[in-house]
Amino acid sequence: MLEGRSILLIIGGGIAAYKAAELVRLIAKSGGATRVILTKAGAQFVTPLTLASLSGNKVNEELFSLTDEIEMGHIELSRAADLVVVAPATADLMAKAANGIANDLASTTLLATDKPVLMAPAMNVRMWLHPATQRNLETLRRDGVSFVGPNEGDMACGEYGPGRMAEPVEILAAIGDLLGAKGMSKGMSKGMSKGMPMPPPAPIAELAPPRRGEGLLAGRHVLITAGPTHEPIDPVRYIANRSSGKQGYALAEAARAAGARVTLVSGPVSLPAPAGVMLVKVETAREMDQAVEAALPADLAIFAAAVADWRVREEAGQKLKKDGQAIPPLQLAENPDILARIARHPDQRPPLVVGFAAETEKVIEHASAKRMRKGCDIIVANDVSPASGVMGGDRNLVHLIAAEGVDTLPEMSKAEVATALIRHFAAVLAGRKES
Ligand code: CTP
Image 1 (cartoon, rainbow, N blue to C red):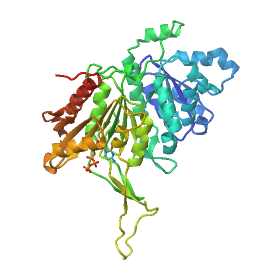
Image 2: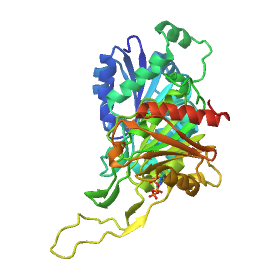
Image 3: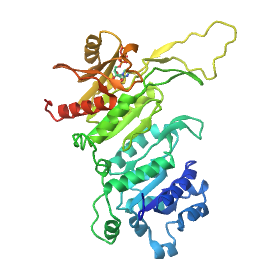
Image 4: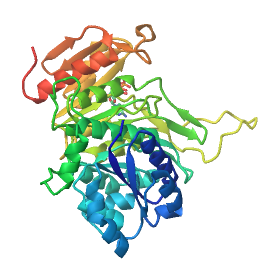
């Protein structure tokens, strides 16, 4: 898969650095070559010797090494590769790259490179969700940097949430995607590194061409929420609902296939991350609200998540025990209504805001009232009564409710519904209705 391809791997500092060794092994197994830049912090977690043995190449560590500069200077190092991969991409490395800071070999190389860059972020969940990191992420995306992960899970620091580095196989798949989609033959990439004027790194939307939907959303940013939220009661229990996230994930794939840059903010689901989509995994409604805010601005926002309306007022610090006394009462507090808030956002309301209405009776009537109450442009209404089989199932029958009236789509698979909806939203955005 990667025969003749050369990857420059920058390894940042973090517990995930040990997975970088596995990535080097996988690249070699796929026929690719890896040169490694190991940051000082990265060297605390994985040794240069391990990486040199796996890659078969000397590992580069210091910026000013005279012999290295004679053998292969840092500029040449960054240009001889087909792709620069940063794994783990720490908050610090992302901040430097977003701001053009070049004060060590890794950051200098990132500033000097003229090749596509793929980052696999890994950091504590609060660091990841911090507005500074989310701002840097947005800047880097605008600069054409691609991302894989981070994934959600238990973290080395004992917390849970988005921040775990994508698995080496996922990073390998993203590398294949980027290099494959760019269609660079070996000869072309060699020619380009010999001083021909280089095009700027292509943004991700150009790297993987749309598969269906004819690029209707090219150049647009689509923000989608999906899945349930989990509202903790104590460290081991939570309030949840039956949402599988399938419809939201299918929408993310369809928007991606239509050429959009997609941010998918997802509650806990057991679905694989859609390729080429920026996946931000969250647990609670409040985390989802923050992640949505951080992802603005967007051209189209689709709220397909089944957000819990209430959370437990005070999460117990320890597991609640049956102690023979009265059953503990659950005091609830209302969660933020993310859709309603974004639909009335004072300065960053997306031009098209779409909500979902999951109803079990009087579907159109309730959904129409919900559209007015929430202030969104379109409501996609569906019947989620147990008899419909929609919750958790693969098929869906939806009604599109807008100011102009109601359209009912035929029953289809969730993937087909997603494609039909994306085509419709793209048409509305483009200012014309599809016939
Ligand atoms: N939604 C949201 N934030 C919430 C609740 C809902 O963003 N806290 C969004 C959902 O993603 C969906 C729409 O609002 O797009 C409608 O969700 P639903 O749960 O059906 O609406 P509710 O406001 O909960 O109304 P009700 O409980 O009366 O059905």
